[in-house]
Image (cartoon, rainbow, N blue to C red; front, side, top):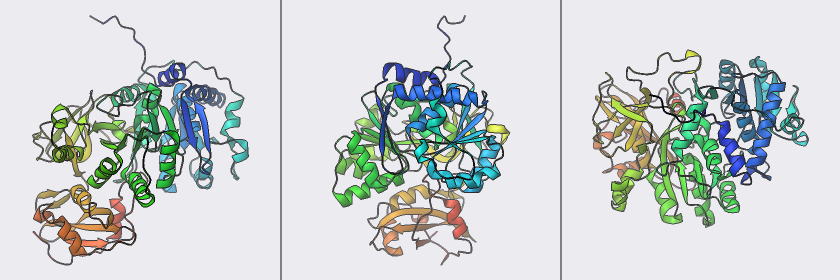
Length: 544
């Protein structure tokens, strides 16, 4: 027997419709590269998004066509996002921080028909266009006065939509229609496309709004630092409008002072970013003596959060830190480190152990641990295994068949992460499968050593990689980037690690470097580190 409820498609245009209809006057604040702040509302964005849909239709864009954006977070970008998806096109976000060759590969693989870009990327677009023949038109997110000089024809976004009507019938398609396209970082080969549906994005927004997730509300002012080209901006580009939260979009400037000023000027209560952004913010605040007056909580994801960041936010500034875990293939949020009832009554040191984990599953998802043979492993908080995940917001395949079959016989997706799951259901990433140091048949967590090393007062950033060893297969070495003016020796770092990790985990060498290379999304680029260590030899046989 079927139920008798209305069958209304879960398409994302309904999210911005809701924001405009019931939170229409709520502000969206944008800052451009020059620091100029502009203010609009959800009603304004809704109207502009409809104009974008009409403009795309006038260009001959049809449902399923890919529309690329290459830009930082701003109100025009949000309008283009909803305008493209509302008329059935696929919004494909390109990361401007990637190398030209990577962007060209991704745009060609996606078959992008149009490109809407930030004016600051004009030089990059000049180099890109000859390599991507599918792009028929270029629009820049600006007005006519701010148009960059180019050798190719381009149009200002404001002029492009100004002549269009703000009336358009959205959503005349199935909820399983493709909605967005985002590519993986490609650390182990060519990037692969993850093709989100309207249904998956809508459900993800509802999942993240849970009290035990991001817990956004109409009373929040949200600073969306995580870029819109980074896995749907962690879904906040959907969840904030869904509840009518004020949305603050910082543009390209991510330095500590710029982020702090926006937080204070706009009364931000919640923000989301990768650890490197928060490190820059905390360093600025410590140097300037500034304080927060409105910020209540932040979500940190993209890479494991060092305990020092959690403690500094909480103890020095009264801000709660929520760790989140996910990936492009999970829409992206999968787990959140909000305490459950039994953890909430534990002592502060006991609670910290759980805060350092990546957290518990969002409702609607399943996860399991398996060994290399696919056998299930216990959830005892100790046994590491490959993390597998399943649910309505999880990729079932890659765009255009890349990567072949990606699900096991039970329909679980292999995340490529190695983790543990404890009896309370808290998952903790111990490493990426490709980054774990395999020494003498045992696994050494590079992430755990990195996070502990980051607690040393002289260390600004740290990375651990495995290097070949004739007896143990691999041994870990530690790379440290020191804070300006700080000094430390290899023995200092080893003494600091002593007693905090197993003796056989102790790095065989400590190298001090000017910079730890970071990838386009702010994660440590271990591929680049390994390339830089080509020819490196361990100074001795090691500690095992």
